Amino acid sequence: MKMTVKVLKVCIALAILVAASSYPAAWLLASQATEVQQIQSYDPPLIELNKWEHSEGDWDGDIVSIYGAAKGDPVAVLFVDESQLLRPSEDTSLALLPAAEGEHFLQVKTVFFFAQRLTLAAVAAVGLGLAALWLVRNKLRRSQKKSTASA
Image (cartoon, rainbow, N blue to C red; front, side, top):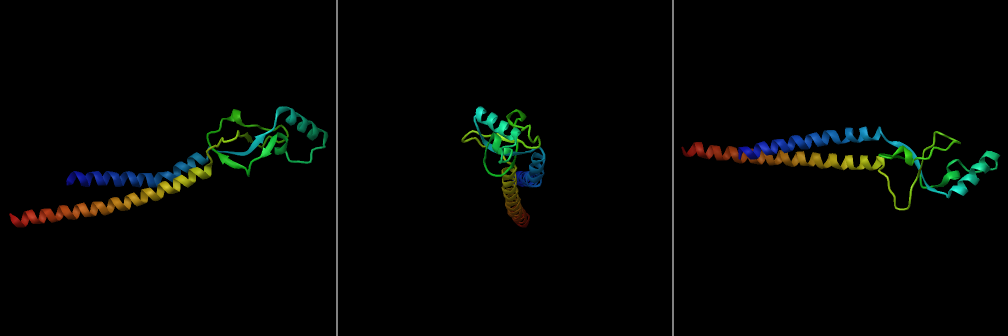
């Protein structure tokens, strides 16, 4: 029974550690994120034609549409190699990420989604662990009272 109490205390401590560290870990990862615009890249000859039109002043679209069709809004992604990114010479502040069909990148919002779920699960585990610890200790006290009363 005393071993059970020790195991429960260790499990509760680990759950508290997980609950306390999931959001800081997510923030740490988010600080390493890169803000990109995902695009469905055009063929190289079409990109060259679009660049030429832009340099001549005939381009009516935005810089992103020179290189490809934008896929949604800009997002913060993690673990993207710099060699995968396109940095247009027309606007070097942009980071374009050509994405093949079915290719998905880890986004910061996904990391925070799982950090929230992990924190909630860890808090629930702490609650269950404390309830189990209370039950085990009460049972241990009752058994000790019975043994001292019968002696």
